[in-house]
Image 1 (cartoon, rainbow, N blue to C red):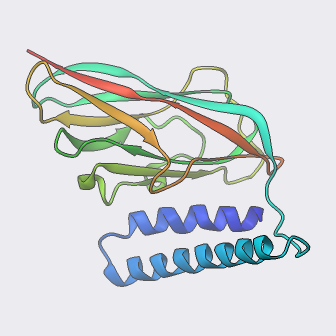
Image 2 (cartoon, one colour):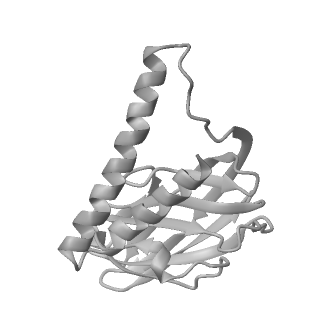
Length: 203
């Protein structure tokens, strides 16, 4: 189950990053769909017969990783960056989530100031950022687990607002298209909590 979860993280990120090559993108999509169907079929069989063997699932523990996105004030047409910090980041080897916004209100620019171990631009699926979504999938390469003090800075995400002065735009953590997933070194799943950010446009 753990390797399947890691494989899904990799395939999901690969799919998001391969927007320039349709054949590769379709192959990655097909692999992700095949994995999803296999998991769904296994769950269906288990639900149909209570005595049927079930696929082991990673245990969910009563601990929470909280990611907080900052707020910013900026003039219309100028670029601003929102910091993302973490609390409860303890012995983690895997993390995934989505960030969304209204595409009519913001233009995505980049991610910057990446400070989490093994986190690079390749971990962000921004191929479809024009649709108002960026996905993150991170795996600690050594699988030894990463622990950080409270309010540790992970990265910044930068935008240019398209609304007029006085407007406010929310930037949200969401579980679509990439679901929340927090994996510990013990192969346990932690709870995920996201505190959304906001950009206020001023004169």
